[in-house]
Image 1: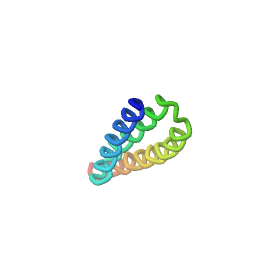
Image 2: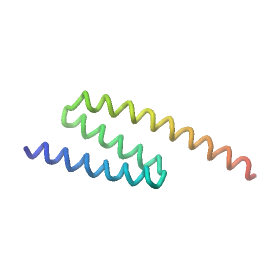
Image 3: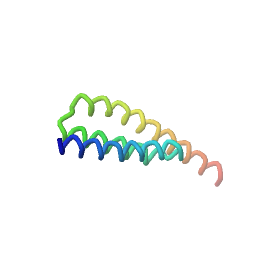
Length: 79
């Protein structure tokens, strides 16, 4: 029972962080929150859940790379 409570608390905390990062368009914090949830899922041997989360994590990583490239292009345009 304590393990379930601990897992739930950790995941809920990171879901709150993910929601805040979406509202503030902070893709790095979103990635960090999702990555942490995946790690917690692995710790509790929830391999199916961690595999599903990995899909989202990969999509967010691609989005983050896209934003980084856009930022680099904007920097190049301003010089």
